Image 1 (cartoon, rainbow over the protein chains, first blue to last red):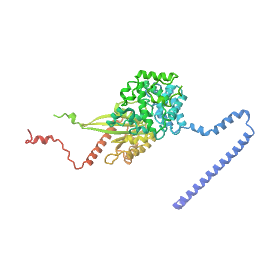
Image 2 (cartoon, chains in turn cyan, blue; image 1 turned 90 degrees about the horizontal axis):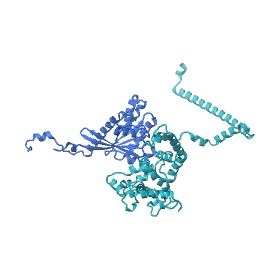
Image 3 (cartoon, each protein chain N blue to C red; image 1 turned 180 degrees about the vertical axis):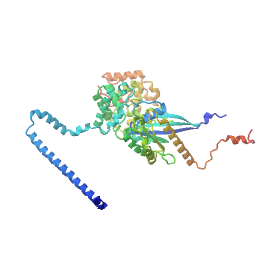
Length: 313
Length: 211
């Protein structure tokens, strides 16, 4: 007690510093010893392997070696940063569909694996809200996790414009630019604009999820039929905005073909966009897909005559 | 006789609902507007809208609720979404501390992108949602009051969209603040203006003007 009282704060600090230094030295010494022991072990292992692994141990040893050599990949099985977000969105995907509405449904775990696999495959995108809906529709139709995964890859990497889902949603925001939307649906857009309605607030959602949960499935799936085959946004020359306009007008046309009723709501100001009656339009889509011939003459979709066409077969 | 209905003053307020992914923004709005709850509302993409009409004394208040997606990458678009907002709820999930940590980030984003005509910050209320799920905040009440003061929130509420706790209280509280700030703005914009008002008692007492 007396001893302690006699020490000034400076002395105390010095004593603490000394203890700290000593502890640090101890730690370093310990670490060095560990390294040395490991090095010794490594040398020993090297010698053992050089003299050949006994047949009965070869499988185990090889397995261990392969695992060690691929550690960087194996470490990836630790949770992806997007893992939590994916988890949070699982039960909030296609909630009105019976395959996804039950928390115990196997479809939810399939969806989780597809989204997680995708986030590893495309780290620049990782997970973007909306991909859950795309993957869910893919799962419903393709009935296979692997196929659904590739469908997601096709949509993000090949079909949608570059950077559509990346961390700052650069390309998808183009559709938020005033004017980018207008050409496709002249009258409707003008009408809404006249009322001070920013259409892009609504359309942003439509495009990001390719209309999943914006359209009923009997319209949505035929739209996807055409979309998966025709949409060539990624490879279309010209700046992204051109493509956004294309998307609008083309979608309006597609919708009119698939569901004549939507023609009322999506009525376009451009007279040259007039399409055949709904039934005829629908038939021409099916004949174009099922037949080996080129689409019928005068097929209304500009894009069918473009790059999307199967090499004139 | 003028119909009282026609004279009813109307207010339209744009109110933002922001906060991290999955904290219950959509659930709060659905509870408030549609009096329903579901544990699996679909994840919001971009922005969704809802309208709540309130009878406020003799006036009508229309709240245009903007339900904004919580994922960080949608944050680039918040400038567009925040435009002309009069008030905001910032929501966090009491069962997930990270969502509370994000509250400051959301508040800074809000204050940097939107302000009132007089340059002031818009009225913002902090909502501690999912309070039905155990974690009690009431013990931390004083800390929360201080937090609100430090970060410019007009107040905070523990809410549960599931059990319908405090949501309309929080909304009324926010509307009160919005109306107060609106009055401040009106006063500051036209400081030397007399607004003519009908004073029925005076009119009756003036016999000279009476028929």
